[in-house]
Amino acid sequence: MANSANQKVAYLEKRVSSANVVYRKKYLFIKRLIDIVGAAVGILLTLPCLIVLSSFYLLGPNKGPIFFKQIRLGKNGEKFYIYKFRSMVVDAENKLKENKDLYQKYIKSNFKLEQNEDPRITSFGRFIRKTSLDELPQFFNVLKGDMSLVGPRPVVLEELNEYKDKKSEFLSVKPGITGYWQVCGRSDVGYPERVNIELYYVYNQSLLLDVKIILKTIFQVIVRKGAY
Image (cartoon, rainbow, N blue to C red; front, side, top):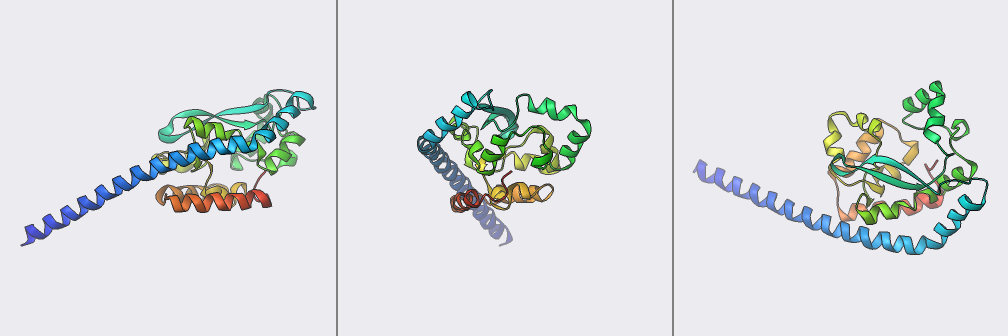
């Protein structure tokens, strides 16, 4: 009798596990489809804005490369270049590292500095950061498959240490342009709180949650909360 009950439990557990695998595959397929369509539409709708912003780098005082690219960690720890409109001076990282005290403060402050003390950010850069316009080129990252519309924010290698024994869980999903951390405060929420927020998304992924995050992101962009 006991063996029969154990077999039934094992059978039910296998059915549940199989159902979860099927749901996961469907979710990832639909999510990728939404990413492709959403990124393509996003690029088309913002194309005039992309052209206008690009002209500021060609004609204005902020002359130099239009795009900023930086190596970030993607799904399963794969490295890729994330693209943004350049909001900093040319050779920004070396400029920051020249000031050793300020660089240490940058590391200790969750890889952030107040805009008035950050020597890298241009006046034009402050504007596009505040309005989140600097993020528009990441639609191309989504089309390439490096990122998703929704997911944890991709981190640099140094930031990964903040996740300690949860690194593999954090890297188990594709990073996103927006995510649960962004709608919970973005730059106003630093480590270690950010770890719990990002992992919440990892453990609770669903299409419904993705839609909620996208809608909240639109609101956050409008009110410019947490963007700097």
